[in-house]
Each structure stands twice: as structure tokens, then as C-alpha cells.
Image (tube, rainbow, N blue to C red; front, side):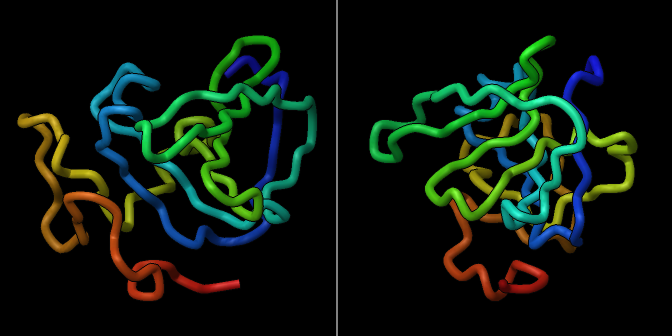
Length: 138
């Protein structure tokens, strides 16, 4: 947001999630979050160093580490269960209009006024098989 942290994505996303879970709604103050999922080594930091903040998730899911800009505190990316992946916040891109969700997840808690686009996979929770959703593996 302020430019203190700059990054470059060095590969196409594995997948772009639009997550409608209550946790994401509370964290963003919005109806959902759009996360670009990439391997950690494909998110290249160009400037600044995000600060890790542990945030509780639903009790059965432990914590999520959100990496925030040290100056303006905007969430740049998250790490959930595996440090091998980054969930980059699409809204932090220079051109967020270049990204569209590949899948909608946790639609069981989707706000009633949100309309899901036809033809885009949607799941009440998380999808059961990433090989059917992700563009590439590895």
C-alpha cells in the first residue's frame, strides 16, 4: 500500500483462491479475500522485509502467519500449513485487475449478497483434490 515492501511473482500462480471463510472476512474487513497461491521461492522480495504476525485460525487449524508491511501493516502474503507456499494478497499487486479467481472456497460462509460466477468451481469448504484445481504442480 505504501510501497515500503515490493515484490515480484516469478511464475504463474498455481491457483487463485477466493476464500469466503469467516476468518478471511474478519481479517480483511470484507466479504472475502483473493489469494494467489505460489511456491515460496517464486515470490521474490525486491524491497523491504515483511513482518511475520501469527494469527489464530479456527481451533482445529492452529495458526496462520501473515506477513505484513512494517510501515503500513497491510497484509502482503500468508503462510498456512506449509512454508513451501505463499498466499499472496491479490489486492497488493500493482494491477490487481489482472487476477481472477480460479475457485471459490468456504462458500458455506459466503455472505448472502455475494453472487458466484457461473463456470468457476465452488466448494463449501476446501476442495478435495488439488490436482483438479491447480494449474501445475511443483
